[in-house]
Amino acid sequence: QVQLVESGGGLVQPGGSLRLSCASSESDFSIYTWGWYRQTPGSQRDLVARIGSDGRTKYADSVQGRFTISRDNAKNTMYLQMNSLEPEDTAVYYCNADGTWRVTGTPGIYWGQGTQVTVSS
Image (cartoon, rainbow, N blue to C red):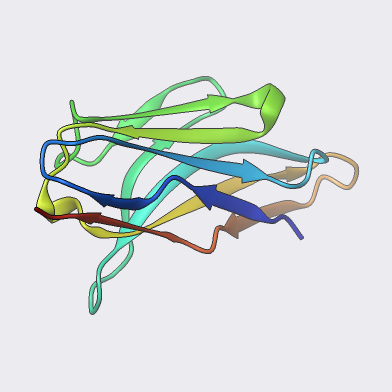
């Protein structure tokens, strides 16, 4: 089992910035695609951004140009830099790792526990 530990959430004023981090506990799990998703009460969990092993990224239209996703493979860590935050960005943010166990070749998808981001004055 892979544990994904998120950090960096909190309360910020509109127009402010936050940086989320997500670290994998398991170096034997090779992560192909990292992703950030977010969810508000009563809504489905939606993709915010994802990054592949080749560095290619995809963003939701609502965050394009404001958020930047990145990864540090040496640290098994992913980041989400969020700038120009808006009240509509308020949600629980979840990280996601899609990859393969190195030894067995078994694929797996894992989720973090979620971190709250609140944008409010």
